Image (cartoon, rainbow, N blue to C red):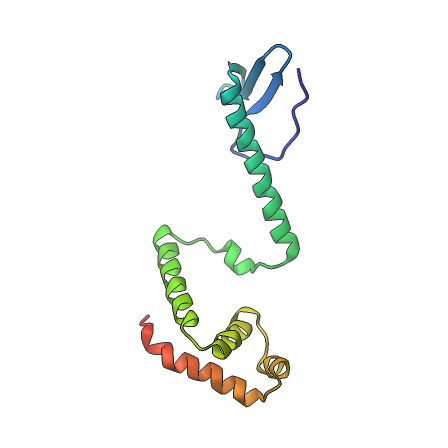
Length: 153
């Protein structure tokens, strides 16, 4: 048998792939509900589909690990589980917020982004933009005030 690369898989993926290109033999094996090893001979196309799925899963694991290691997540958000309805509602609200932000003048847009999404203080923003803290605060407050009527929660 040819050596198949060892890849990380999701826990609910019970399949193991093996092949012998010399013999044109492709096997997918798994344990059935009784704990017995089952091996199924498949054609190359089916084998390739399972192989692509493993590659996809492995890439998702890598993305997830990179994300976790980067520290750019919020434990509260990750551990929070919403219903499908809540998630859909949140997505609609986020889309509305994006539309409102994109309609703001460039300076307000940048300041809102820095303040709410980069968690910068008013002082930090003012220093970056060479202006006063009050100018930044007024700009952000004005943008929020002007657009608050668009959201009715």
